[in-house]
Image (cartoon, rainbow over all chains, first blue to last red):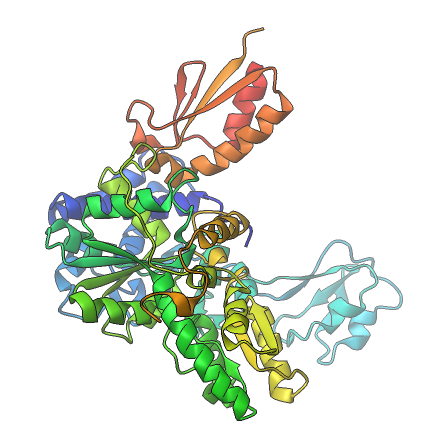
Length: 484
Length: 78
């Protein structure tokens, strides 16, 4: 996507993150958490809902979700109650959740007739409707919503384009048809189908879909000064925190706010690249093919929607898991993955090696809470864990290029850039229409550089990552001292 | 004629609340009105971070700035 704009919804979300992080860091969250809605929705502030009380109630629901609790299941509890429950009760199983109070229940009548209808003589709409749902009333076609089966044929045949297709933004954004609505017409996520990509979160203009976070957990850990905690920086981190904030500055700043070590996930990508290219060579020998495993939403799409292809997914773990395992083995430290991705939050639940996941956005809110101003921070510390290869995992096409380099063979690769394209390719692979050796699947447009929690434009990030990649000490993953 | 001085804060709180978009917009405006606008970035403006993003126009401070508001103010003053 062409860069995430900072909408009012995004600002409110970030203000909540900052306030919560501040309170944890100042050791006052138990006493002050109930004041956050009042601080953010002021009596004389801008208003988007009926009244300030509703604004505040919605903020309260958002806080519950930030704490990791599904607001639907904890309607009658206050954030302060949930704070006490943390640790005793498992937080929400699903990362992406609907905040029903914020959902506008947008119209779900899929087809309606607009004023462009001329009540023409041919009335193709009436003739083509398979269930006789269209009649003419007061000189205009009318769709009986009780009869309509939403086939869309009327819309196709109308010569005036007078029939409007109404799709909710969340439904339109979802590539895997996981969004429906409940009896109150509120958005509902079908978790059997959802792949945690986060598209609906970005799409909803009411901010009614959001993701749970680990901000409070991470702040507690860094605040205690235990200092046994390693930040794992995803390859797309370059330039996310401001054009002038170089990787060396960011590394130093992370240590300043309480992280003990900082390591590039690119090193994990190097390890993955070596292992996965070996796997690919074996597959090619067997006349078989391989699907990439580093994007968890792509992996879930295959598992949930293309079951037949499940065995073709690479058995190599993702770069996040790989690097977390290495850190655990080498230091025993707590691990915090920091990336542009919501899906990684769900992936991390399956692996003990990854303790917490933060997005770039969440990290930056913690920085603000810790009064770390990166623009004026000058300390630097060298960062050179990853080879050029590992750093290229950040954008669409990077992984397949690495595979071509490492297998040293002519291989047939395809890349799915975004979930729609991924599914199209998977369909073609299933039917045999497309023959491949390797498929790189990235759920986000542009790869991780276009992820939902990026702070910079996808194209700019790609450029900066490429520059950073060219500066790497080693060109190839197999030259890196840790993989060689 | 004296140029209008526009200073956009790019400190972390302002960046998080949309300063990058303000800078994109300012770069565009400056190209358009090169002889009328002097555009700079600052690291913090009087610690007004609570109401980020902050912009200073000829010494006058504006809080909670948006690209639309900024454009309007500037076009009015040049």
